[in-house]
Length: 275
Image (tube, rainbow, N blue to C red):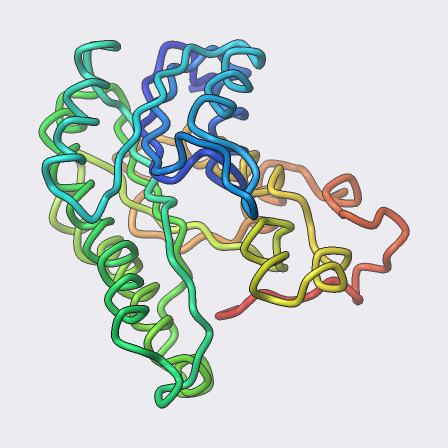
């Protein structure tokens, strides 16, 4: 398969950042994209809404359906999936992108924040996948792609922020288990960046302008995701992909165009967590 034309993608949290980059990469092929996210009104600290995302998708050549939904709530997820199927006739691809982050040590992690991360990251991924699966099982070359890291049980990835790591690894465990459960029927893979990505989360929570300047743009994740989604669902499943490794396998080795700071040496890029 060489294009995502006519495919229907359901993307959680895709009003900005990596989710939006995946949406636009698919839209350039002529895909249908459902943006299921919370932001319907402009946010003072976060760029984009489901409606601005829909406009970018349509400008790139795709069809868009913006749906306001909070994936913590089953009725909202079901309503969003129903709206997607009513508009486009089915769902071929699910991108579990929505995520919450708090890089706090145990004693500094309040339970409200703990619950938010687990409800969105682990539970939200499981719930959205469960609701989409009846349609994915009837889809064309169906894929589920979770924006989650390789499972690595080294203590160094847990000790600084146990709650966050547990919540993100919950998404990765969905990849591990569901890939085997639905082998030959639906592909399940994870995708994670080698470096930090210039998103609102990095800007607001992970170091501000300095870290952003040492990051890559979300486009690298959008392009890597597209290559994964074009692969055969019966053979490309159960993988934890790293963005630059996906691109290298497709012959893309010059990644300089993805740098926020074009003149920054590669060795000065900020590595991401978990890799």
